[in-house]
Length: 265
Image (cartoon, rainbow, N blue to C red; front, side, top):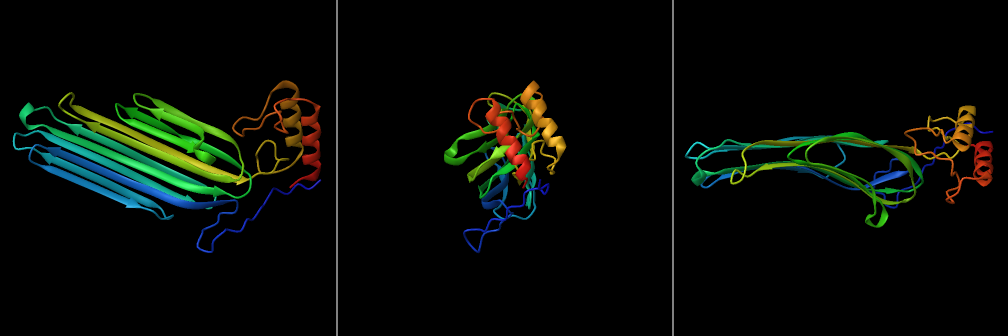
């Protein structure tokens, strides 16, 4: 039995691409924006980046109208791309103060992160993080090949935790995150906010590493047997007893796992 973990090195299709083993980033769009405006005044800020280095940005815009109404918008983000993960933390906020309806001030703050990437060989992945929104909107969505939704989270008035894992096959994927907050004093005033924080992490997929701990050993064998016999499957890995993915749990799954376990990676 070979107990080495998988290490599949895939060549990029272009010499200008940056390869991270099984994953190749193709396109990034990262931006913050803020705006505020009244009847006779306005302010706006925005910053964007399309690279792979760490992106840190704060966009703030504030105005005070002649009659004393104020409005402020803010968008922040820190995000990055490394050899085994994509990550981003962002926030949008907006506020206004009440005042004469003849001299209103609106505000908006936004943060957005998008990355398009190609998976060249199967990977085990983890998507973790959280969303929070207070009358704003926050989202995290992972799209698969052809625009199919793999995971989608949206929040408007609450918090949610993101904790997903599984296996992704070769293809082109997109990860989107956004937080948006705005206040229009023609129907409300006060403050709104939304934020996201999420990490997409991966390792080369090794079928015999059933529990996803980075090693192929008898813990994997024991964990598969427990999953197969008692449905007590490892959490946070996407692993299940239907090892051959034929839609049934039967001896063919057991036989397929034993073969993978003996072969190793």
